[in-house]
Amino acid sequence: MTIDEELAQLEESFRRLKIEYDIYFAGGAKKPPVDTEWRVQSLLKRHAEDGKLSFSQRFKLNSVTQRYAVFSDLWRRKTKVKEEGYRKPEDMLLGVGGFGRLEAAGQASAAAESEAESFLVFSSDVMEVVALYESVVRARETVGQPLGAFDSFANFVQNKSSQIRQKYGCEAVEYTVVVKDGQVQLKARARKDL
Image (tube, rainbow, N blue to C red; front, side):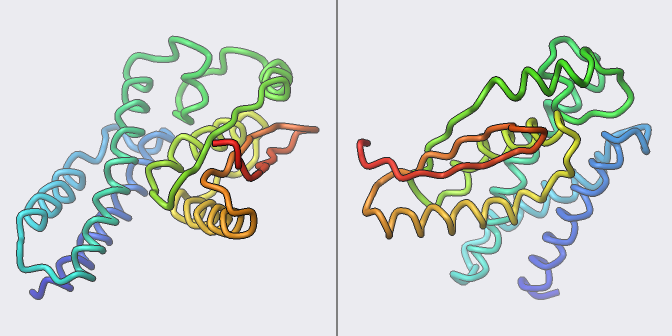
């Protein structure tokens, strides 16, 4: 098997792992997908130590590694909530099935409408988008809107940030997540003062 085929297999395994975790957290599986996760981890470790990768192969590997790191942390937090149950109101926003809500839906949406969260994006680094994505996910779950995929959201934010930085000649772009009239709004503005 060539390195390109192994990297394609790694991407497919990671995609399958995300699906299996979604099923687990929705209550459709009784145990987490540890076998698939072990397979992804071992492929990542094996290729991380390979010095023979071309630039495009290294880029593909780093992309999967970053996405795995982001989702691994999210899965760890969700697993803790699933095992221990809801301990605080924020836990229900992680989207773990099998538990009741801590507060009524009307109270949750009213609380969400009064609070706006802001995030700064300075570069095209995917890691800067993680906190913003989690805020949007929490807001969307609160109002019952469907969730989007992280990859497409990160691409959107990076492209929008690049356009705003180019147009206004600023270093940072501030994103604000607002819930208004039962809808999640994502507002962006240039920050020249930073």
